[in-house]
Length: 171
Image (cartoon, rainbow, N blue to C red; front, top):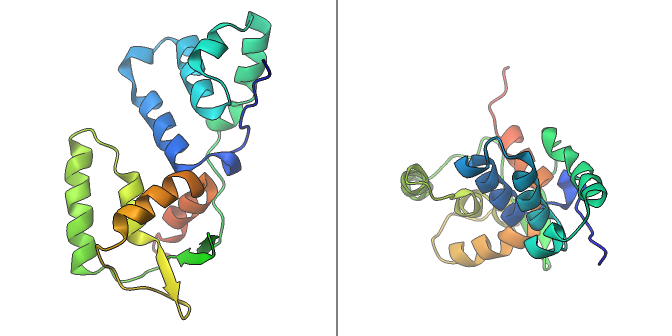
């Protein structure tokens, strides 16, 4: 069986990034680099854990070498918009956060404090359809659909760019 592996951050989706983050936090994998590597390969490849466990040592080493990009910080894109299924989504640097956004994010931070990853929901709050070149106003309607859409379509450089490009700059 040929196993194909993603080998750049540009190929990794939000869902995969979240799964990788969970592996990185898994206390049972500390000090177990091979077990950790197999879990990462399962997320970033076309193979199941069972498939990966059947390969020989040399093949495993080659596969693991393909995911060494993870040791590097992703390079953010400067793009502020992305087109998905014909709809342009974006965010605005320094956008004013509304009370609705603040309450939604506050709730998510509480969920996150309870061990649940909420990155997908946070991005769905911040990245919204563009209307006449501006981000549409925040509303709860459509939030879950956007969250589901972003899981498999947003790539790491775009949402990493959102985080980096949204930081305040010095004048």
